Length: 344
Picture: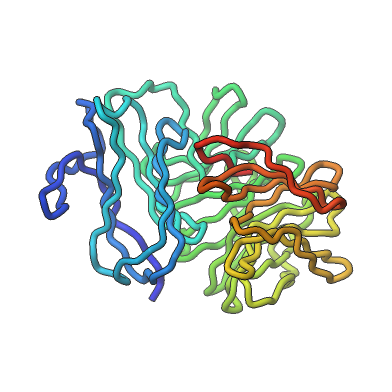
């Protein structure tokens, strides 16, 4: 059964049996708490889940957990609260299952400022054409892609489709944007011009395709696909042709990132019960494991000179930023605080 989470709605009151009393998308009175309700199907015990609440585009609350409920059919409830009343603003909610957003919704508390841009993404916003930034947002009640200037002006909607569009990746020259969309029933990779025109579907198969990453010369895209039954790294030409499967191991491989010289791809691999960093030399065909930690390490990003890799690590029970010296084989912790740091 396909894993789905749907029917997201919000309420500020529930019955003793956790049934919603007053469903709404606007809460002008500033309640102390708001509940998110979803229905689910195809879930299995042990899945890594992370509900995330955002206020005006900034993460406000997140409590990762392991799924231990039934496979399907019941309503699952999440909650955000603050004594004295939730602050006014735009609230977005996402449920991330095994690093993939499977449900999302939004509501307002009070009257949020109309001019406040609210970029919303599980990955970092991506720069395009100098100061322009491309991001995903729920501001129109459906996850779409937008662009704006670095000072937050000139917000432009790039996609307009009933399905969700998300995870943008901009080509090195800023002329194109690769992204994921479920507009054809499952996760596929698309590309469009940086102004939203010329949308083209690059992948087309029954499996799920996600995590597009441009090569430094803009000629190829690395991506993840489970078309062969397991999440592996693949590479294709920028026009969707010439697909090559780069990894074919039993572990799930995700988050590809090209080295500046185009010879290596760093990615996350689920090894020995943990997410670890791995580098694949696509020229020599060699794979090298970089980390072997008790915490999950993921979402690598190369330094411009290609000697270091920044990544996110689940240290001390929350996400922190690290950097790995590929030559020396040492990792250095960059952040150390009580909130999550990540999305490179």
